[in-house]
Length: 385
Figure 1: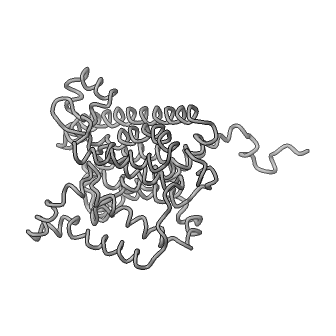
Figure 2 (figure 1 turned 180 degrees about the vertical axis):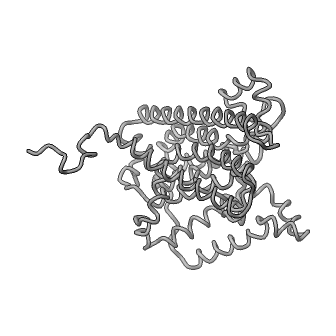
């Protein structure tokens, strides 16, 4: 990495934490089965959704967190840090899978419902072919749909040392490699297998989604400059977002034959699996308008109302794993209680509360308060000089 526009001087940007927290809460909502609240998330009215927020913000944050390690300690130490993070993500991926598998079996055995939770998540192959499935699970060649975000992020992050090496020649070379890899997906259908028993690729193709991650990374590293604040540019972004609504909102385009045909025609450029170019552009427009809206109002993110969401975003990995598990448990609770307005609202509110509370618990443990015993004492209980 070059020293120009070094990320080493950047301070923590609460906007990253806030929007990552929002993305984590939206991911929870989206994975609760038959959740009416999910019909009002941004992804229901446009090409991009919470996954795009999560990946872009993670790329931006990676430039700040890992970029300074490469600059300060060198390539070998920086690569070691990436390997460590990869291992953490890998362990969380496996832990999430086994936790969800256990809950599915528990639900089938003890809940008085007619739902087969193992079949619901398409985990039958795992239980029927344990030897092949375990090998596929650990080798990332068996990636059921419910567990596809972390593997994608792992592969994208593993590319970082190579991107850094290319950037040592010039950052534009690194950018050209990322774009070339993205184009290879669209032209040559570059993909990874997700199933053993039949042919299916990873739902989130990492060779395509790396474009969004490294768009954020390049901005965070200062290699790309943010677009200036211009009224005409904001209007263009807003119009693009507005025009995307009819071809993204299923209740709308399903009512008009020509809109449905148009949606089907543009499917490759709005693809979620291969990050269609219009999806990438949609997110950038949304991000531009969000930054523009917050300009001069950043102090709001320091307030008490935003604090729980910011804290949630700061503990992204443990909250994500917990949120995916809670989504399944929330669906089970609704299967038992019914999906009335009140019950769904209560389950969503409880899920939000638990995720935010968990974020504070994780932050407390990370602060290692036991290393400073005086922190937990009342002033009157502390030894006097």
